[in-house]
Image 1 (cartoon, rainbow, N blue to C red):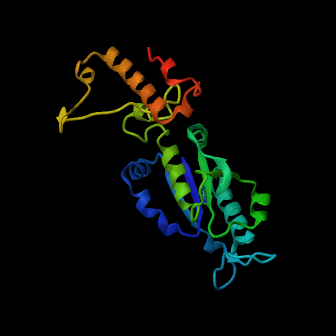
Image 2: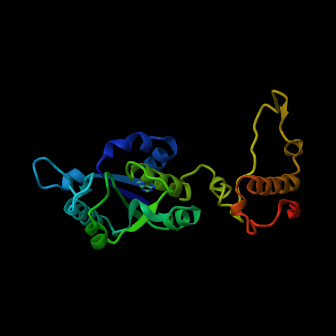
Image 3: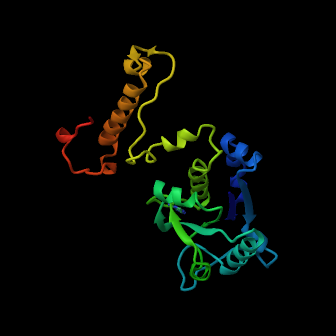
Amino acid sequence: MRFDIVTLFPGIFPGYLQQSILSKAIERGIVSVHLHDLRDWTHDKHRSVDDRPYGGGPGMVIRVEPVVECVEEIQARGDEPGRLILLSPQGKRLDQRLVSDLATASRLVLICGRYEGFDQRVIDILQPEEISIGDYVLNGGEVAAMVIIDSVLRLIPGVLGDERSSQEDSFSQQHGMLECAQYTRPRVYRGREVPPILLTGDHERIARWRQEDSYRRTRAKRRDLLPDPERPPEDDSTT
Ligand code: ADE
């Protein structure tokens, strides 16, 4: 899978790209990430990418020409234009369903915004999908682009060591429930014991316990994820 990132701050990414899962996937050729500095598509000697808004008001607006020219050029470079995404708090909210859908693409081109936003003609001309990572405002789309890469990568075959682990993630389970509790050694720490059932070696009972624990946690922490969130707790049965 190929990611292209269009940004004013390419220097934000290398630390993240060197983290182990991603760097191994890059080394193994499963994933490639290409950074594009918007300033390379400016025409003036100051390499200015933003300007004051028409009609007045505070802040600066990212100019239309560098963004459109950059995106058109990089989309023409690869084997296919890919899915074009603009990170914006005004976009469709990212959830695991959208992540799974994005993971079916072979190329994602991610445009990171900054300042007060883009000239509207960027959106009108390029018609990107606008995606938000949540109802809050970041300083720019770079962190949001990393969130997309990180969540999508987990679903690409061969990226995680153990294929099962992404399917068992919270939200990816059959009914979109949270992941069950996990334990490792020591068996007792500060008086707190690992649930004895996990030590029995009885795989069927362990699987059932895990399912029940997922349900209990979802009910306690994220009731809204349950198929029938309005049902009162006393009606809940896990068997
Ligand atoms: N840019 C600024 N805020 C954002 C958000 N919440 N999601 C995606 N991109 C953004």
